[in-house]
Structure formats: structure tokens, C-alpha cells
Length: 283
Ligand code: NDP
Image (cartoon, rainbow, N blue to C red):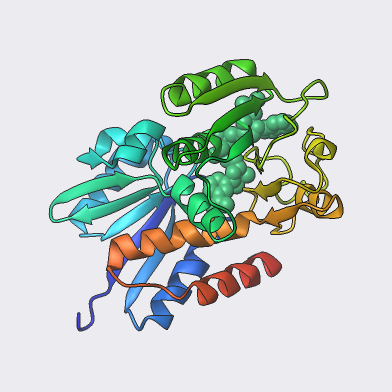
């Protein structure tokens, strides 16, 4: 029992107004009977070093980083997990004694959600996007034994950068340009939209990918958490594909962070419900 003193964790990012993580994590603290607080803090790029020093001085148990700090935070930490090292970005920081350790739970969260439906080992995957989320998911899929990965991105340069990261990790790797000319291999088991297309408020934006090529066969996943049921997933379901919402990835990466900070197991149902409420009633 900490008396009147609460344990603190936080989110550092800019902008942060739309970020629902506090609603999810504080609901889980309450359900677990923990007198902890999760603060949503706007930190400008030139304030990040001071913010990390402040977190150290005030004994924060850890913090999340979001845009634009996921890469920049690395130089302010004492060590990185192997996955964060490979991904080159950190979304979760954990205090361990006097040290701050950087983790990346985005890809691991996706994998945890996926594993409840399909075994990633041996999977043949089409990964749409080559930004931070795609990189985290690509690395974790490769480490989990995916047999083939096709990275498909609008910008060729970023696609090739990700291809270079994944090259030594996966048996079959292809890089392609996202657009009308791309055809998914007929034996694709999993398609992941890891672009930002479809994120609220641009909910009718269309991912330029022909789902007809994988109809009735592939599991189709989206990283977009809001809205949970994206246009891309609606179209996949109409074509007979099983679907996986980005909200599940968000819950799972939050569960991993909660465990790392508190050592306790959070209630996933409480976290999911809090997120759905937050998305239905944006502040
Ligand atoms: P980045 O900015 O790093 O990457 C964005 C990606 O989307 C790039 O591949 C970019 O392509 C592509 N893209 C953007 N606009 C278009 C477009 N109009 N047409 C085609 N491709 C496009 O963002 P992140 O990777 O960090 O985040 C991506 C999404 O993932 C966000 O919406 C975020 O909310 C979500 N996310 C979800 C999480 C969850 O837990 N559910 C966790 C983390 C992120 P290009 O390289 O050509 O610009």
C-alpha cells in the first residue's frame, strides 16, 4: 500500500488529444485494485529529453511513446529489448531500478491477437505499409516463423528499407508497390493493412488493394483501431474472409505494457470495453 502516493505511468506524444490509451489502462488499474495513474502528456520534439529526465526524477514506473517520439526516445534510454532493437523504435518504456528499458509492444500485440485465430508459423503474408506499425508487425511475424512476407507500400524507398530489415529474418521476401498493378499471391494466408488508411475521421478512405485475390481464404487484419470495423474489414468479410480488428492489437499491446509495469495480469474485457466506449464518445 502506497499511502497517499500513486504510482505513475504516462503517454508522451504530440498530438495526444485523440489517444485513448489512458481510458484503457486506467480502467484496468481500477479493475485490478491498483492505485496507479496513467497521464496523457503532450511533449514537443524539443522537450523529449527533459520529459524523460522528469520521468526519471519523479520515479515514473514507465511510459508509452507515440508519434513523433518512438525513434527519438531510443537515445534517452539505458537499454532496448531485442525486438525494439530490430524494429528501431520504442513504444513502451519500463523502469527497472534506476534504468529505463525500451520495448516495442506493437508487433507483439498484433501477434498475440493473431495467435488466438491462426498460428503465424509457416504463414504466407501480404503486409500493406512500411511505416512504424508495419515494421513492428513484419519483424514479429518473421521472428514467429512466417514462411513468406510480401511488403507492399505506396513509397518504394520505405518498402525497400523494411525489406532490408526483414531480409535475414524470413525465408521468402518480396517487396512491391501498393496500387492497382499489385496482385496478391493465390496462396496468401494473411493480409495485414498496416497503413494509416481508414483511420478516423477518414473512415471511407479506400486501401488500394484488391481483396478479390484472397477472397474466402486469407485472414484479413487491420491495424486501425478506430473505427474498430474499418471499410477494409467490411469488404473482406463480404468476400468471405475472416477478419481481425486493430482494436484487438491495441488491447493486446496494452496488456503487455500493463504486465511489464505492474507485474499483474489485466482484465482484457475491461480494457476492450473502455476502448469501445472511448471511441464511441470521443472527448
Ligand atoms: P507511419 O506514418 O509510420 O506509416 C504510415 C503508413 O501508411 C506508410 O506505409 C504510408 O505509406 C502508408 N500510407 C499513408 N497514407 C497512405 C495512402 N493514402 N495510401 C497508401 N498508403 C498510405 O504510421 P504508423 O506505421 O506508426 O501507423 C500506421 C497506423 O497504425 C496508424 O493508423 C495507427 O493508428 C495504427 N497503429 C495501430 C496500433 C494498434 O495497436 N492497433 C499500434 C500502432 C499503430 P508511405 O510510406 O508511402 O507514406
